[in-house]
Length: 400
Image (cartoon, rainbow, N blue to C red; front, side, top):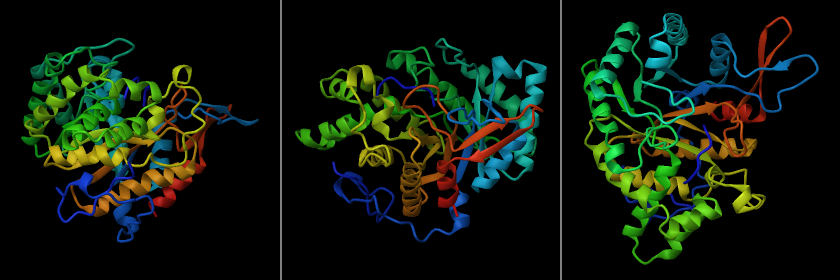
């Protein structure tokens, strides 16, 4: 996860059907336990993306490395007990380079042949430090077709169109008209994948988009209840960002992403994909303007925020909600357990909730960014090894 710049009591639902109204059934779910899940069922709905791990991974004999080879990633993912593995391919920086294309295809086959179902991100360009335009829909579909052709019978479990298309630090748009250039790309990709009986979804609605439009939705459902809506904002965002949202400072974002949800719903996607990290309030926290975050509980999911967002998405979409990227922002293994408990609870509610949960196992390089489940090492003979952090042990244990 890259650092993001903006973003009541605990809310959960007892569902008679997948569309029961979350916000009208308030229940403290922090201690809820999905006891009807077997260990096989748990692991069958989780996946991983193993990336660089470089915090606190030092000793006298090894040097910390920023990544490990596929063989180590496969061992880690197998040790966690997950079914899915997330891979990505980019047209401009990889597909058009013979050696990088071959490396991707080799990695894909290694993971596939090791028993993993693949969550495949297909991207036309990488931002690379500067904002990029959404690709031409015909060019994207052609590229997607080439990728899928090259995989033959080893089809991905699902395809993800671009990555974090609502990330305004990646993509060059500021208005609804600018963002809606993504929709033809999505629709063309849906047509291509469905012609091959492959499931497909968007690249990931991120927290800076989800939080403002969920807040706006709560306002429309509970007019005049400022205690509820302001409470949501102040639990979801650092103090400075929360005040901005409450005072209308994010209306421009709402005007972009709120109507875009209708475009998604009509696109034919098989899921709606969200990206989420906890404690969510820290994702937008800035010590320089918000002060110390010492008062934030860094060991648990922030009560009610994630649940409200899931409630919003469930109200807007008939397709299942999933995430191919979730994780934690602190080193607490209690937080790992809290996040996993929340996803397992939702999975127990029915098939509309998180048939896939892809965990981001990597370290960010700034404060309040992702925290990995493992440490990675390389010795002087260039031999790689790894160890599980307490967070990794907690993750693995929760899936047993």
